[in-house]
Amino acid sequence: MNKTRPAPDLWLFLCIMGLLAIGIIMVYSAGSVLALHEHGDSFYFVKRQLLFAGLGLVAMFFTANIDFRVWKKYAKIALIVCFVLLVIVLIPGIGVVRGGARSWLGISSFGIQPSEFMKLGMILFLSKWLSSDEWDITKFGKGLMPPLGLVGLAFGLIMLQPDLGTGTVMMGAAMMIIFTAGARLGHLGMLGLAGAAGFVGLILAAPYRLKRITGFLDPWSDPLGTGYQIIQSLYAIGPGGLGGLGLGMSRQKYSYVPEPQTDFIFSILAEELGFIGGLIVLLLFLVLVWRGMRIAMTIPDRFGSLFAVGIVGMVAVQVIINIGVVIGLMPVTGITLPLISYGGSSLTLMLTALGILLNLSRYAR
Image 1 (cartoon, rainbow, N blue to C red):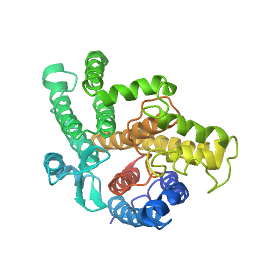
Image 2: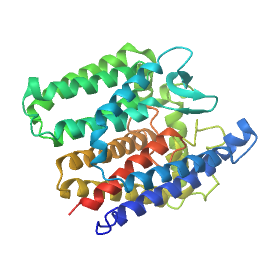
Image 3: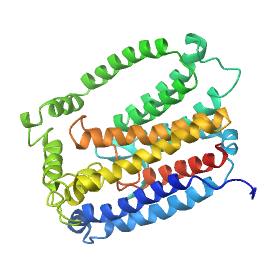
Image 4: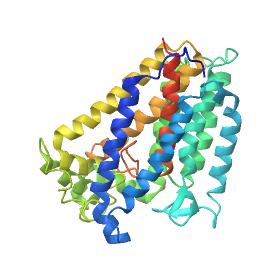
C-alpha cells in the first residue's frame, strides 16, 4: 500500500463505528424479549449480530485498503453473479421463504439475501458503465434507456420474490447515479411519471400491498390488521418523550411491535432513548451522507465519484424509507435501518460498501 496516501475520512469512520455500536446495543435491548421467548436465550440476536458485525468489519477493513479502481475490473462479473443468484433464489426448493418472500439462500437460520448483493453489484456496474467517455447519457434512446432497462430487469427479478422495499432502494440509488452522470431532467421527469404509474400498478396488482396503503392512510380503519404495525410503532415513540424511558425499559418490545429488532428498531430506540437518542442517530446518518457526498464531489475520478454517489444513495434512501415507515409517513415496506437493525447479509454488505467509501475518501481532494 502506498504509504503517502492519506488516511480515510475520520468523520466518516467515526459515524460508521458510532452507528454500529448503537445498533449492537439496541439489537440486544429491542430483541432480548423476543429472543428469550422464541430461542430461550435473550442474547440470541445480539450474539449473531456481533458475529456478522465482526465479519463486516473485516470486510470493511479489506475494502478500505484496496484501491477502488480494482473493483472496476470485476464490475461485469459481479453483476452477472448477482443476476444468477436472483434467478436461483426463485427456484422452489432452493430459495428459502421468510416473511412471505422467497428471497433467501441458505440452510436453517443462516442465509444470504441475493437482492442485497444486487444493490451493490448494480451500483458498481452502473458507475463503471456511465463513467465511460464513450457513453452519452443525455441521449434518450441510446444513452438513457439501456441502463434503465438493466435496472428495470433487476427490479423485476426482485419483485418476483417479492421484495418491494429492497427493489426500491436499489432503484433509488441507481437513479441517483444516472442523474449525477448527466441525464436530462426532462427525460427523467417523463420516466418518473411512467414509473409512478407502474408503481401504482404494482400496488393494485397485489391485494396485500393495497391493504398496506389503506392501512397507512388510516391505520385505525384496521387496527389489528394492516394498521397494527404503524399504531404500535407510534405507541412506542410517543411515551419516549425527550429523554426516553431508559435503555432496556421499552414496553412495546413485549410482543406489541412485530420484529422490534429489525424493521421497527428505531421506534424502540425512540421509546427507550427518547427524542434526544433518535436525533443523535439521525445526525450520525446526516454526517455520514454529508461526508460521502463531499467525497463524491472532490474525488478526481469519474468512476469513483459515481461509485460514491451510489453508496451514499443506497444508505440515504434506506434510512429515509425505514424511518418514514416507523413514524407513519410511508407505508410498511420491510426495509431495515442501516447499521442499526438486526441482519446478517444486509449488515455485512453495508459495511463492505462503506469500506469502499472509506477507500474513496483517501483519494478525495
